[in-house]
Length: 232
Ligand SMILES: C[S@@+](CC[C@H](N)C(=O)[O-])C[C@H]1O[C@@H](n2cnc3c(N)ncnc32)[C@H](O)[C@@H]1O
Image (cartoon, rainbow, N blue to C red; front, side, top):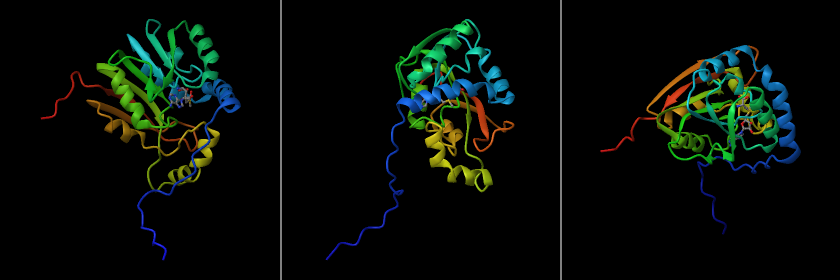
């Protein structure tokens, strides 16, 4: 007699995605270098506001082809963490063009080669949609920030439940991940940031013009506690 399978609440198992490598990564680096200037005025304006007054040592995760380098003050020391090796020539060109003081560090958002409590700011724009494990990435951010250090972010996020945009984000999720290097349209990234253990979070939700489907956006800062909180 065959055993009756037990009902399960687990999500249905999907075949693992094939790793994106080689020509795909090369193409994506080239494409980003061409398209990054066209993301729109609203996003550029906010990046300028968020990055223009930073100081000390900054880690930028998922630096891509260097779209943010023009926004930093000249005296900031920037550690760039970018796992796609094909971005490197574009990043180096952008850093030279903007006279930025930079180092490229190996690793990913989830595991950076950066010492504990060593940096003043971590910057992350349009990246948490693409990392494999956003929770792990945010724990890394908290780890590398000095006490009182700040996480600066700008991301596209899931639309509100029940809207047409959210339904299309759900329908297109798999296809979009394949053609956009793992970018996931319907992540509730604001909630992940709020849960990550920062002392304070200041998150603004906004709509950027002319951006279809990968919207709305959030931007803001989250601050690491000045001293470790002790549970009693
Ligand atoms: C859409 S691009 C954004 C580039 C840039 N930050 C900007 O604002 O234009 C996403 C970037 O995240 C990088 N990325 C993807 N997964 C990552 C991970 N696990 N850790 C760090 N960067 C990652 C990609 O290689 C790519 O450069």
